[in-house]
Length: 115
Image (cartoon, rainbow, N blue to C red; front, side, top):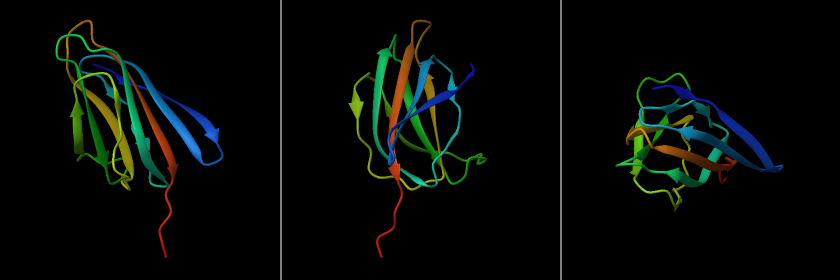
């Protein structure tokens, strides 16, 4: 079990792509502060192994100890989430075996409130 860091790629001035690569059974992704961003979509790729899955967790702040699960995804494919306005996000691999090796990519856009 380890904490896997993320990388950030800025596609446009208003679109970020954040990736956690090589998530294995028991790993947690480094916490990503997202208070100024809306999660638009997720892509999970890689080797699922026996029962490998990722729990997408949201919290109110990056230092929270209470995480809300938005769903556990059990097969590598594209998933889209409703717009989330939480303050933090972290992926956690909650099952799998020694062959589980998943990559998660999250697309973010700026959070704006309608007047």
